[in-house]
Image (cartoon, rainbow, N blue to C red; front, side):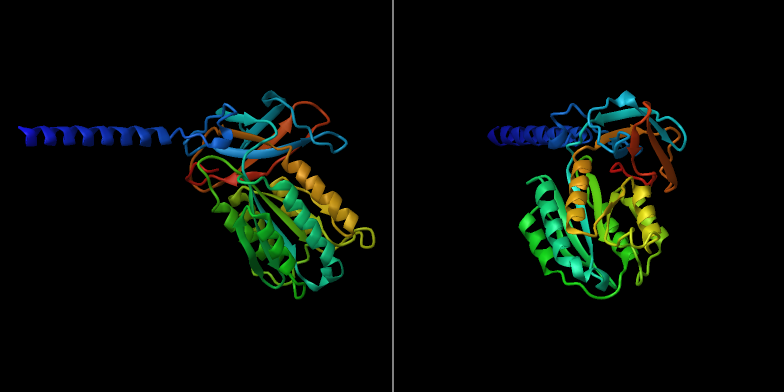
Length: 321
């Protein structure tokens, strides 16, 4: 009888464990990341959920942080979304940053203050335990100098190790960074950003400009370009088209980076943009996870407000969108 009782108790314990595991697996479909638990946002595991981050500026270029959801109009493939999953002002979502630094000969004279400005930016923008970044130096090819980390000292040392010289492979560097960012995922949603410090003149890439812009869409990342050539002395600088397409398609913009004061202002502007983002999750109408490109348009209902957001995404099979 004792042996039978032990076996029965063991069977009951096993049944309870299986039941608990089953409930845990069911609950994982409704998992809410710690960074969103205090916002009231519940993230869906549906394949068709699209996640966007964007900024709004007034006619003077000042960021507006406190607009409600109904202040914006959203179109996905020219149609209103089926439903809105969540909306968050001044997004507190985790941030993943790719810092791409041009090492070509053309930037040698101002390379030192570019390094220091980039280090200061990372120290100001990365929140301990939450945000991470990686460093890519590029000339004739892209080189990962420091892999993804939240350790600002490691990132700073990697930037200071960089030395200028060689050609410029801008497209390759962007494709490389997008590939790494695309692989970054959490149990929930995060923000991705590329900071490109370059004149945009590509002399060595194997990838095309179209490859680079499509990579941005796949990685769902925004790109800010800190332009290191002088548009005053050269009104039609080489590389302008490259930087314009890379920034406009992703929802970013070009900033000046010729002088030390320019760099400081530009990195502060990027910092302000990243701290002023809205986050929006929605389910599009007529969605099919077929790999097709779908356009996105967000506009403000009130005149005088401009919304900066990526132009679209690929409808791939997966919930981390």
